[in-house]
Length: 251
Image 1 (tube, rainbow, N blue to C red):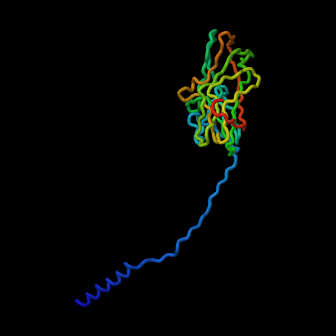
Image 2: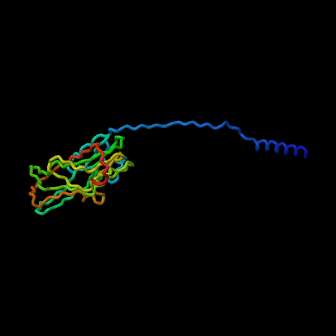
Protein backbone atom coordinates (compact mmCIF):
# COMPACT_ATOMS: atom_id res chain seq x y z
CA UNK A 1 0.00 0.00 0.00
CA UNK A 2 2.84 2.39 0.73
CA UNK A 3 4.38 1.79 -2.68
CA UNK A 4 1.14 2.48 -4.52
CA UNK A 5 0.62 5.69 -2.59
CA UNK A 6 4.10 6.89 -3.52
CA UNK A 7 3.48 6.26 -7.20
CA UNK A 8 0.28 8.28 -7.13
CA UNK A 9 1.96 11.23 -5.50
CA UNK A 10 4.87 11.27 -7.93
CA UNK A 11 2.55 10.99 -10.91
CA UNK A 12 0.55 14.01 -9.83
CA UNK A 13 3.68 16.03 -9.26
CA UNK A 14 5.00 15.25 -12.72
CA UNK A 15 1.78 16.28 -14.52
CA UNK A 16 1.52 19.42 -12.41
CA UNK A 17 4.99 20.44 -13.47
CA UNK A 18 4.11 20.08 -17.12
CA UNK A 19 1.04 22.32 -16.76
CA UNK A 20 2.86 25.03 -14.81
CA UNK A 21 5.77 25.29 -17.22
CA UNK A 22 3.78 25.34 -20.51
CA UNK A 23 3.42 28.70 -22.46
CA UNK A 24 0.94 29.45 -25.33
CA UNK A 25 2.43 30.58 -28.63
CA UNK A 26 0.72 33.42 -30.63
CA UNK A 27 1.29 34.81 -34.09
CA UNK A 28 3.10 38.15 -34.41
CA UNK A 29 0.70 41.24 -33.94
CA UNK A 30 -0.53 43.22 -37.01
CA UNK A 31 -1.97 46.76 -37.39
CA UNK A 32 -4.27 48.34 -39.98
CA UNK A 33 -5.37 51.97 -40.32
CA UNK A 34 -8.85 53.13 -41.43
CA UNK A 35 -10.38 56.59 -41.91
CA UNK A 36 -13.54 58.57 -41.09
CA UNK A 37 -14.87 61.50 -43.13
CA UNK A 38 -17.67 64.06 -42.63
CA UNK A 39 -18.58 66.93 -44.98
CA UNK A 40 -20.54 70.13 -44.28
CA UNK A 41 -22.43 72.40 -46.68
CA UNK A 42 -24.02 75.84 -46.17
CA UNK A 43 -27.44 75.62 -44.52
CA UNK A 44 -30.49 77.26 -46.09
CA UNK A 45 -32.64 76.45 -43.05
CA UNK A 46 -34.37 79.06 -40.91
CA UNK A 47 -32.93 79.55 -37.41
CA UNK A 48 -35.64 80.19 -34.78
CA UNK A 49 -35.21 82.99 -32.22
CA UNK A 50 -33.23 82.16 -29.08
CA UNK A 51 -33.10 83.57 -25.56
CA UNK A 52 -31.00 86.77 -25.82
CA UNK A 53 -29.31 86.09 -22.48
CA UNK A 54 -28.73 82.39 -23.11
CA UNK A 55 -28.63 82.01 -26.92
CA UNK A 56 -28.71 78.24 -27.20
CA UNK A 57 -30.26 77.10 -30.53
CA UNK A 58 -31.24 73.85 -28.80
CA UNK A 59 -33.70 75.88 -26.70
CA UNK A 60 -35.57 78.29 -29.02
CA UNK A 61 -38.08 80.83 -27.71
CA UNK A 62 -41.22 82.49 -29.07
CA UNK A 63 -41.03 86.30 -28.82
CA UNK A 64 -44.16 88.42 -28.52
CA UNK A 65 -44.43 91.41 -30.87
CA UNK A 66 -45.95 94.31 -28.87
CA UNK A 67 -46.93 96.10 -32.10
CA UNK A 68 -48.52 93.17 -33.95
CA UNK A 69 -51.03 90.82 -32.28
CA UNK A 70 -50.56 88.25 -35.05
CA UNK A 71 -46.89 87.84 -34.15
CA UNK A 72 -43.49 89.02 -35.37
CA UNK A 73 -42.33 88.97 -38.97
CA UNK A 74 -40.99 85.56 -40.10
CA UNK A 75 -37.28 84.81 -40.00
CA UNK A 76 -35.18 85.16 -43.14
CA UNK A 77 -33.67 81.98 -44.60
CA UNK A 78 -29.96 81.07 -44.40
CA UNK A 79 -27.14 80.68 -44.85
CA UNK A 80 -26.60 84.33 -43.75
CA UNK A 81 -29.78 85.44 -42.02
CA UNK A 82 -31.50 87.87 -39.68
CA UNK A 83 -33.54 85.55 -37.48
CA UNK A 84 -35.33 88.15 -35.36
CA UNK A 85 -35.42 91.84 -34.43
CA UNK A 86 -37.47 93.16 -31.51
CA UNK A 87 -40.25 95.66 -32.13
CA UNK A 88 -40.35 98.43 -29.51
CA UNK A 89 -43.18 99.71 -27.32
CA UNK A 90 -42.60 102.91 -25.33
CA UNK A 91 -45.83 102.63 -23.38
CA UNK A 92 -48.89 104.83 -22.94
CA UNK A 93 -47.86 108.22 -21.57
CA UNK A 94 -49.53 111.42 -20.44
CA UNK A 95 -49.15 114.43 -22.73
CA UNK A 96 -46.49 116.69 -21.24
CA UNK A 97 -45.06 120.12 -21.99
CA UNK A 98 -41.74 119.10 -20.42
CA UNK A 99 -38.87 117.26 -22.11
CA UNK A 100 -39.54 113.59 -21.42
CA UNK A 101 -37.66 110.30 -21.80
CA UNK A 102 -39.62 107.06 -22.18
CA UNK A 103 -38.03 103.61 -21.91
CA UNK A 104 -38.94 100.75 -24.23
CA UNK A 105 -40.58 97.78 -22.56
CA UNK A 106 -38.54 94.58 -22.30
CA UNK A 107 -38.89 91.81 -24.88
CA UNK A 108 -41.66 89.47 -23.73
CA UNK A 109 -41.85 85.76 -24.57
CA UNK A 110 -44.69 83.26 -24.51
CA UNK A 111 -44.78 81.64 -21.11
CA UNK A 112 -44.42 84.94 -19.25
CA UNK A 113 -40.64 85.47 -19.28
CA UNK A 114 -38.87 88.65 -20.41
CA UNK A 115 -35.43 89.58 -21.67
CA UNK A 116 -33.53 92.39 -23.38
CA UNK A 117 -34.68 93.65 -26.76
CA UNK A 118 -32.38 92.18 -29.39
CA UNK A 119 -31.46 91.36 -32.96
CA UNK A 120 -30.41 87.80 -33.86
CA UNK A 121 -28.05 86.95 -36.72
CA UNK A 122 -26.92 83.51 -37.98
CA UNK A 123 -24.00 82.76 -40.30
CA UNK A 124 -24.19 79.17 -41.56
CA UNK A 125 -22.16 79.75 -44.74
CA UNK A 126 -19.22 77.73 -43.43
CA UNK A 127 -16.63 80.30 -44.52
CA UNK A 128 -16.03 82.45 -41.41
CA UNK A 129 -15.47 85.43 -43.72
CA UNK A 130 -17.35 88.04 -41.68
CA UNK A 131 -20.48 90.15 -42.07
CA UNK A 132 -21.96 93.54 -41.17
CA UNK A 133 -25.28 94.58 -39.60
CA UNK A 134 -26.90 97.97 -40.23
CA UNK A 135 -30.11 99.66 -39.12
CA UNK A 136 -32.05 102.73 -40.21
CA UNK A 137 -35.19 104.42 -38.97
CA UNK A 138 -37.72 104.90 -41.73
CA UNK A 139 -38.78 108.43 -40.88
CA UNK A 140 -40.09 110.15 -37.77
CA UNK A 141 -42.94 108.90 -35.56
CA UNK A 142 -46.26 109.70 -37.25
CA UNK A 143 -49.72 109.46 -35.66
CA UNK A 144 -52.74 107.67 -37.06
CA UNK A 145 -53.98 111.00 -38.44
CA UNK A 146 -50.61 111.83 -40.01
CA UNK A 147 -49.18 114.17 -37.34
CA UNK A 148 -45.39 114.02 -36.94
CA UNK A 149 -43.75 113.82 -33.51
CA UNK A 150 -41.16 116.49 -34.27
CA UNK A 151 -37.76 116.16 -32.60
CA UNK A 152 -38.33 112.69 -31.13
CA UNK A 153 -35.13 110.63 -30.92
CA UNK A 154 -34.47 106.96 -30.11
CA UNK A 155 -31.24 105.94 -28.37
CA UNK A 156 -29.96 102.36 -27.99
CA UNK A 157 -27.63 101.71 -25.04
CA UNK A 158 -25.67 98.95 -23.28
CA UNK A 159 -25.46 96.83 -26.43
CA UNK A 160 -23.51 93.57 -26.26
CA UNK A 161 -22.96 90.39 -28.25
CA UNK A 162 -24.06 87.03 -26.79
CA UNK A 163 -23.39 83.61 -28.31
CA UNK A 164 -22.46 80.02 -27.50
CA UNK A 165 -20.45 79.70 -30.73
CA UNK A 166 -16.73 78.92 -30.43
CA UNK A 167 -16.06 81.21 -33.40
CA UNK A 168 -14.71 84.58 -32.17
CA UNK A 169 -17.33 87.25 -31.53
CA UNK A 170 -17.60 90.17 -33.99
CA UNK A 171 -14.76 92.53 -33.13
CA UNK A 172 -16.62 95.75 -33.93
CA UNK A 173 -19.88 96.93 -32.43
CA UNK A 174 -21.64 100.07 -31.26
CA UNK A 175 -22.69 99.81 -27.64
CA UNK A 176 -24.56 103.15 -27.80
CA UNK A 177 -26.11 104.95 -30.76
CA UNK A 178 -29.01 107.19 -31.76
CA UNK A 179 -30.93 107.02 -35.01
CA UNK A 180 -31.59 109.90 -37.39
CA UNK A 181 -35.31 109.80 -38.25
CA UNK A 182 -35.11 112.07 -41.29
CA UNK A 183 -36.17 109.43 -43.80
CA UNK A 184 -33.09 109.96 -45.97
CA UNK A 185 -32.24 106.27 -45.95
CA UNK A 186 -28.94 106.74 -44.11
CA UNK A 187 -28.12 103.52 -42.21
CA UNK A 188 -26.15 103.11 -39.00
CA UNK A 189 -23.57 100.30 -39.02
CA UNK A 190 -23.81 98.68 -35.59
CA UNK A 191 -22.00 95.29 -35.73
CA UNK A 192 -19.20 93.98 -37.95
CA UNK A 193 -17.50 90.58 -37.91
CA UNK A 194 -14.12 90.31 -39.62
CA UNK A 195 -12.41 87.38 -41.31
CA UNK A 196 -12.16 84.49 -38.87
CA UNK A 197 -15.14 85.73 -36.82
CA UNK A 198 -18.89 85.46 -36.55
CA UNK A 199 -19.75 81.89 -37.58
CA UNK A 200 -22.87 80.58 -35.87
CA UNK A 201 -25.75 82.36 -34.12
CA UNK A 202 -25.21 85.75 -32.45
CA UNK A 203 -27.49 87.98 -30.41
CA UNK A 204 -27.03 91.77 -30.42
CA UNK A 205 -28.78 92.50 -27.12
CA UNK A 206 -29.56 95.87 -25.56
CA UNK A 207 -28.93 95.54 -21.84
CA UNK A 208 -29.01 92.50 -19.59
CA UNK A 209 -31.74 90.73 -17.65
CA UNK A 210 -31.21 93.37 -14.96
CA UNK A 211 -31.27 96.42 -17.30
CA UNK A 212 -33.62 95.13 -20.00
CA UNK A 213 -36.22 97.86 -19.40
CA UNK A 214 -33.85 100.82 -19.48
CA UNK A 215 -31.56 100.20 -22.47
CA UNK A 216 -33.60 101.79 -25.29
CA UNK A 217 -35.10 105.23 -24.76
CA UNK A 218 -37.29 107.71 -26.63
CA UNK A 219 -36.68 111.42 -26.04
CA UNK A 220 -39.57 113.77 -26.83
CA UNK A 221 -39.16 117.56 -26.55
CA UNK A 222 -41.70 119.36 -24.37
CA UNK A 223 -42.22 121.91 -27.13
CA UNK A 224 -43.45 119.24 -29.56
CA UNK A 225 -47.20 119.10 -30.08
CA UNK A 226 -48.63 115.71 -29.13
CA UNK A 227 -52.04 114.56 -30.24
CA UNK A 228 -53.98 112.02 -28.21
CA UNK A 229 -53.24 109.32 -30.77
CA UNK A 230 -50.87 106.42 -31.34
CA UNK A 231 -47.59 107.32 -33.07
CA UNK A 232 -45.54 104.81 -35.03
CA UNK A 233 -42.26 104.45 -36.90
CA UNK A 234 -40.34 101.47 -38.31
CA UNK A 235 -36.78 100.20 -38.65
CA UNK A 236 -34.99 98.31 -41.39
CA UNK A 237 -32.18 95.96 -40.34
CA UNK A 238 -29.78 94.95 -43.12
CA UNK A 239 -27.23 92.12 -43.01
CA UNK A 240 -24.49 92.01 -45.65
CA UNK A 241 -21.51 89.75 -46.32
CA UNK A 242 -19.09 92.69 -46.04
CA UNK A 243 -16.55 91.91 -43.29
CA UNK A 244 -15.20 94.33 -40.72
CA UNK A 245 -12.03 96.23 -41.53
CA UNK A 246 -8.77 95.76 -39.64
CA UNK A 247 -9.55 98.43 -37.04
CA UNK A 248 -11.09 96.38 -34.25
CA UNK A 249 -13.12 97.85 -31.42
CA UNK A 250 -15.99 100.32 -31.40
CA UNK A 251 -17.56 101.44 -34.67
